[in-house]
Amino acid sequence: MFWRCDTERQNKGKEWTFRDSKIPVLFFPTQQINCTFAKCRNLMRTKFIHPRTFLMDKLITHTDARGCLTIVEALKDFPFTIDRAYWLHSVPEGAERGYHASRSCYEYLVSICGSVEIVLEDAKGRQTYVLSKKDEGLLVPPYIWIELKKFSPDAVLLVLASDGYQPESYINDYDEFRKEIL
Image (tube, rainbow, N blue to C red):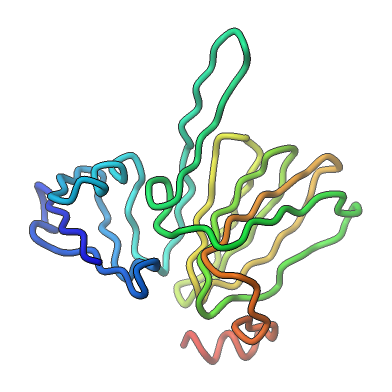
């Protein structure tokens, strides 16, 4: 599947390429995108980034007298279809999770209750994010080391993943991760 996306700046005429019709290989560092493929227009509300950087963005929320409805849609709000969804909750005080990287799986993280600190690392360095709003999401591409820390007592972290669980695709040793990305 190819999506041709034109911008008004340096990316004019470049293409999005999806490997296995699901994983993007190239993103554009721009928000002004005019697409010739109809579905690509829905991606305009998302910032496009290189796979080795991270994206934290605000999700669309509709609010009225009945409450709030926050929407996240595959291939519109993040660049993959969902093969697996899971959530972390009831994490004991001081406990940390993660400490791994995936070789193939994209993940989109949303804190649907409470807060969690997320440390991401690639070949360029480490970045720390705090997910604490129900309408924010964090895109984590493959080959990114992830550490989940400082869970609030009421934290519920939803993870939407591009692949089913495949233990052999995970890197659980930090030194091995560093060797693979450098």
